[in-house]
Image 1 (cartoon, helix red, strand yellow):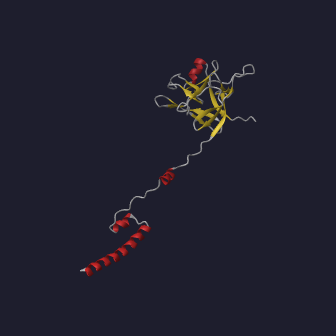
Image 2: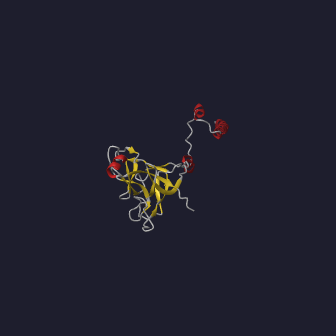
Image 3: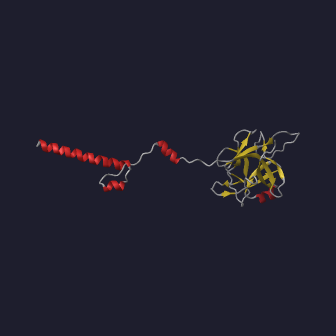
Length: 224
């Protein structure tokens, strides 16, 4: 009986010594689940990667955002005559043109930086906010004479309205109405009150109030 037990144990040791190297060989090659199923083994456990490795796989470098700095030049839409530059006005903000003269050195031209879809004032003489955009809740439409103020605003939907033609420097706005509809408004200038505004019906406002349709461009400072 003892001899039988001894032979049984010896045979088990020999069998185990044969199976373990085979199993190790398969593990070293990282066998597939189909291979394991064929051998009557359970599927492999999922591979667990470190948090750092997973984060590196997900990380994608954002595209670089270019920026351009200059003054805001306002021209008459009909004919292209230069009317002036948006003012860095300490009392009213950037709502109109720089009407500074030698006798009235009240304010200077406003420098801004365009980046993404924003215009950010540089060295503003007026109080915060410092982004340039539109402000108002009126819906703009060719069927009405509503206007939106051209003014300094906080970062957000009222500021992120601009697109820049990098060749000509022309700035164009896209305005989102309260109902979600988008319009491409025209900038108009009221010379009597020295105020800029947006509208979707410039012809009607010109006929009614002599507000002049204008264009606005970002002009790089070329002074030494």
